[in-house]
Length: 152
Image (tube, rainbow, N blue to C red; front, top):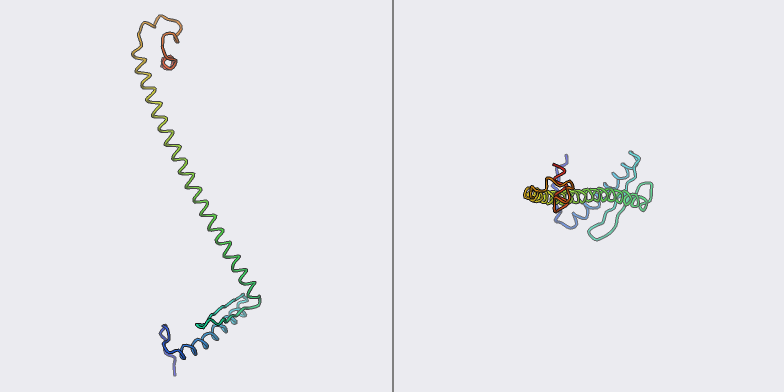
């Protein structure tokens, strides 16, 4: 007589459910032990019944040692993840700071261009009588105007 495929769903009958739990728990423990021996690996298995009873299996090392290894591994993975998150945040903050600096520099450049344009327009309005004067600073009322005149 062959096996039939079992539908995976909760067993309604309480006593059938308990029998199935006992048999499958034993099979699971046996497979964990086989895996440990055949593959030379550390295995820890914890099962809580519906009534809260604890069943556990641990290969070679103590259960506490395996849990400590698990916590260390998990902690290192979290630390690595946190470090990457911090790095991404720092990069974003740096990018934001650089964008703000760029914006300020653009605004400053526009302000300077407007100032230069107003000085140039004031320079054009300066009286041409100053042509015969040797000291250029006396020809212009503002030192910036003299500088602009020299730059031309």
